[in-house]
Image (tube, rainbow, N blue to C red; front, top):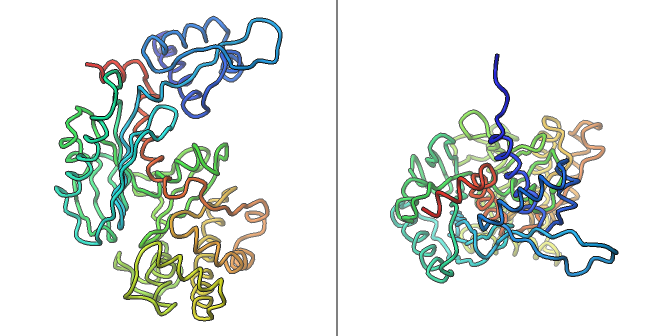
Length: 400
């Protein structure tokens, strides 16, 4: 007969659940925690006391109560003391942030990246250098409890190896291991696909909060995606779930960097838009995409036709996803934010033509609330996952 959870298991679970409420929801009173967690006041008091003693939260009187009687103490995350490092490696940029408990970005560095070969030593050295600069500026009582990176490519779940990244020119790169070695913090570096982590960020802190079924579409040079189903990120068997950009929407269409033809990425990505607008070979990146959208707004016929063409393929891809996953919300991020805003009519037309009526009736289309910070915020949430699972054990290891 299988034994149930021990008292220590229950305590660990409750500590993590309480800290998650504070981390994601911000300052919250003991009374609210009692209601949300379904525990009695003495248990909540004991849990908050443990987390306070560990330096993860602090308790203080509310600034204003508006009620008679003794006010309930407010529990706040120790954002300035407990933090993680979040990294973002994209085709055009490298970014590092020091993110405090509660999701507060305390410090950030960013530089442009040339679209050249993925040099593991060079990239990890630059990122670790930024992290060391930030760490030197912290107080003596601060503690780093985790690190994670968002990478524009396929990441193997088992070991964090970047197995493929056509737009990064990366293949079989032990990125997490090497970055962890260069950081020298004695902490593993978790690694995830950038679009998956951006989906997690929008679900946790962006436009998708409290929505259990959503799809996030991310555009840079290529197209990526993250799928949240039933409140959980769809990762797939080896961690490659959500490669939406390589869903074929136009068999025999444009060549894609993955080796196939007619992928969503090939028909909707940066190159497709710029070539259609007659602008490929000049300016690249988000500014180039934005310039096409702005030209279309000014009445440029070529730019309008390019956006319309790309919008039709984007709408067809979204219709396929809606039919399969029945999301409540589809979010457009990265360069797709601009593309969608410039081609919303075409996207909605394709949904009307190709998405089944029951699936599209309550569907909402939105742009990212977190913008360019989505990937960093998602990486930070990945890094904090260990802390939320076992707060006291993680903090004890970090302090040794």
